Length: 380
Image (cartoon, rainbow, N blue to C red):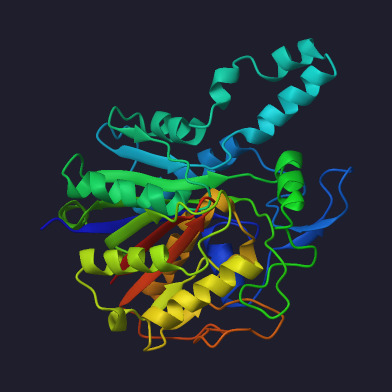
């Protein structure tokens, strides 16, 4: 039976690169700060990487370079497939184009972007494929906040179905744009104080920039080149509530079926799960529903945390970042804390401070707009 293992990780967040982000979270530090990148909005808590919003192309390039270094693979990699998603893609560049167009600065547009075709939503996947010089399959999923885990699940299936032996998977997001802020403000989804997953004072999520990439390959290939292994991808489950355009189905029935499906596919029992990296956005509805789901399915009280209190909500990239951090936790046998400055509101076994812990099997949850549910199982 083909086993799919993770042999390389890159991650960038408002706390810094992979190692800086790990250190910050373990020390209970948040990278979220009040910022005002656009003068027509008041200062907001945001997870900016730099003082101004980042470019998705620059972020993608940095991530692919770093994941190859970490996994000790170097281009050309002709047979390596690519599954890199983004829910927003190059939206920030399109907002610039449209603002210039509305002010009739046509010459500026032509100077700013000689080829607008390079700014279509698949740009991160194409940049990654070009860097690798691959002629294998290239995919660019977009599944709202579930995008990152969808990308990992797709890469896992490419290997399990023997379409290839190695895949670069992940997601990249630079969502701090006027349109995104305005849209989520109208929906009353953004917080004006900070991101506090599962806390009593939670009032919404905080937008953050970032991304993560993973190298997935067969265990046989990894062993043959003496690669370091962070962990194994065991299984996944995916579904859609098909209930409303934005809010999840509050009973959590579809999500719970998806978790059971993921466990069944991986030959796992609920009591085997040591830790769950929750979606944990800090919104009223998500955290309430997610706590209900965990309480109903996992009576043995596994450790729970969400790292969005440190990184903000990176939308489509959040699942890839959560998986990367969870695999580092698995490798180091150290728990990730749920960062919140407020008392927590649910009867769950939250990890509030990092500590050494025996970790063997864990789950990562992502829930996206439109009722998209995806669960990923990982193990040593």
